[in-house]
Image (cartoon, rainbow, N blue to C red):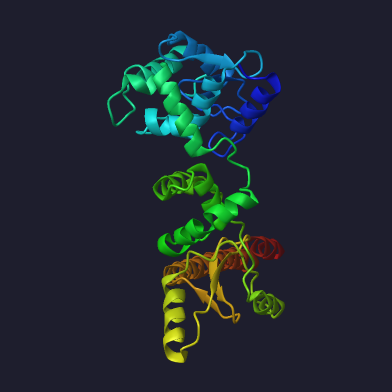
Length: 340
């Protein structure tokens, strides 16, 4: 039996770990309050009720706050987690049926996932349900591999103990992050192969670094003062072929380091420009051709409008001329005949 405070602390750490992210492992709803300890997945209230319908021989559901957990149950949940659950039971990445009005679709989805194993690439092994004591011992060993404190930093003794192995991971395997290397070595108790496996499993969990300003920011800011368009710092990856050619030619001719080229989208016109660190502006050839065609079309439309305007003006002038210069004067003839 686990003390209440220790149970709550462990469940809270597991829930907020990188692999679980405080979400339901089935539908992705935030702040789950239940979990299937043998399947190693956190659950919202709706998914927990469907898990119970699968039967206790498939899913053992417990409340995170109301139920009492044993050490084996905590170890089993911690050794799996949402991400490992998806890798084992949904390696085909079948989407969850997001239909709030149709609970039957969710039931069918979870039955296909955990009972029929339709979303797996391997057949179901009865040990995958981890309901026996031997499986619990395996989960405890898995816990030693994954570590009970994923977010904790290795202590000084661990640093000294695994310093040589950490350098081996860095220089022999190209793993530069010494903090992650030491953490993996501590969790694997110095086993290089297991540490490599831990690092490989968590590689895609590491969040990407925040974008940094380029070292040539001053030159680009100066170019904006001289009338050049402003620069989108985050959009410098997709370059036009013309910009890439200019970049390669400049580097080949001068032998200078590669000039960084940035992409800029005009928010008013939607046009895409490319500006290098020297303030030189480039344009995509395809876009330039399209703009030339659009300009020709606009010029033709303007010419047609001018021709129509001239035709209308000419027609109006002819009508006014007909009114101002009549061909006969019947009123004057009548007056002349009256005098005779």
